Amino acid sequence: VKFCFDLATMTGKKLREDVPVGHNPEEYETKQVFFQSKDGTQVPMFIVGLKEQVRAGDACTLLYGYGGFSISLQPTFSAFRVVFMKHFRALFCIPNLRGGGEYGEDWHQAGIKLKKQNVFDDFQCAAEYLIKEGYTQPSKL
Image (cartoon, rainbow, N blue to C red):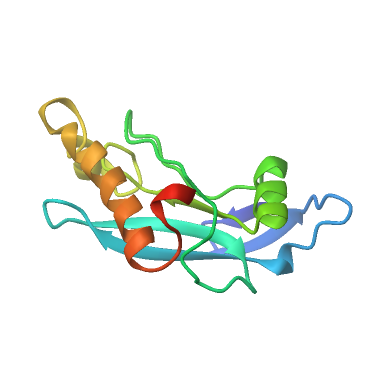
C-alpha cells in the first residue's frame, strides 16, 4: 500500500494498493506486543499471522530481527512470508531490537559498541516471550 501524507493538513490518502491474485489481506493480523529484556527494558515486537490462528503453543515461528545502524524494521508485505504463514499456519515475528532506529538516537545508542550485548539479549528475550506466552515452542522457533 502506498500512501501520501500532507503535513500541512495532517491528512493522508491511499495512492495504490497491490494485492496478488488469490491473496486476501483480511485473513491476517499484525499485533504489537512489548516484552521485557534482560535489563528490564520494554522492547516492542510485531507478531504477524492468520487472524483465526489460536495460541496453542505449537505455531511454526520465524523470528527475525536486526539491531544496528539505526535501521528500523516493520512488517511489510512479502510473498514468501504469506506462503509461509498460510501453508504452515506460521507466525512471523519482528522484535524492534535496540541499535535500530525505531525510537530515535537513544534507542540506537543502547545497542551499539559496548552496549551491543543488549541486541542479543533483546532477541533472546523475544524468543522466550513467544514460548512463555504460548505462541510457539523451542523446536518450532
